[in-house]
Length: 393
Image (cartoon, rainbow, N blue to C red; front, side):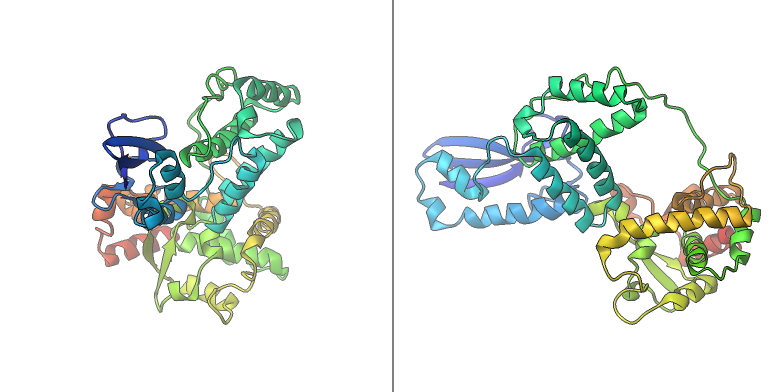
């Protein structure tokens, strides 16, 4: 009895990627079983293992190592039945038609554990709406007919096409995760579901703060702590390359040095990488203002699960700050949210004619494999100068 695991290209590229197969051979008989999927760029062919860029790397990598460990155990080597051999290697008893909501909860918990709170929240909202319509649901019951019925119900409530489509997209993402893990057979229940919910796509210019409005934030002084904290965090985002608020929230002491700060964009998940920025004096003063003993920079980081509550309160404070300072967004006034700060850094950088690739480095944009090879191609001094020019310090 012999077992191997590899990315199997012979079957061709599917919607989920190429299949990752467990191949077992015994007495001139060979059988294959797909248990996950991967793209070519997310697979290390030398080691026959997923790269860190694989979206399920945190779960898939140790699972394959465990399967390899099982493949050299005497209990496997002495097997005569191929079906039992597959069960032993996989290390799990396959559940017939597992409960969709139990699996969805596990995906939501996983997203939160890797600090992808946006994905977790989106999954959660869609699942709540689906469960109101179908209180009990296993994977075998997720059919095209049931999805169509739910879709029509959501539309009858007056929801916009974009809302209904988002719900379906999140449910499909959870469903595809189960398919990729080999837990269920893909019966293509989402085929055609999106055809009658068109969403108008148009290029919309991101809202940003012109320099004069940013100066209002820089000069702001509030006695109300929550308002001043909202201002300080927005400025910190801006000074540090338009960093996402979540990356500031989870900033660790080890990532802050004398005049540099190391950031990782949690939004990118397994594709995230570290990049460093100049720590301007204005940003250092904000960090020092809130810094507490321990591994984390900020005092409110006592419970990582409280981020959803934190950002909700932060947004409310920002809305009040906008009102009190009479701040106007461009090109069209809108809500002052955390993403506006990132868009502001990018827009002001373009207006100052900062090279696009240099701007990408400062903002930690996702890289492809070729980018990663040549990352940090701009000298530190050049990056620092561009950063200071954008933030006006």
